[in-house]
Image (cartoon, rainbow, N blue to C red; front, side):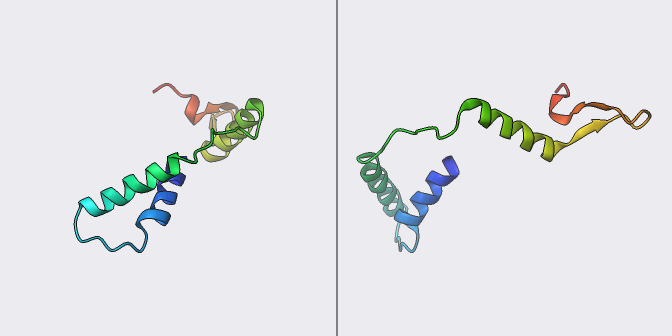
Length: 84
């Protein structure tokens, strides 16, 4: 969400801007933030928590994959389950 917010800021307040000093983009950022906050709406989840957790687990398994014991071929767990 942070990246999306910063992208929105860049696109609407800074992109194609011509700034002659450091304070100018700072003021443009503050002005944009102030105007955006005046029409802000609370975040609304569109999915239920179990579905979000299920999908994040599925993605984690796709990214990291299982740890396979080379001797037996048995699944020993997932990379993110190993102690740090």
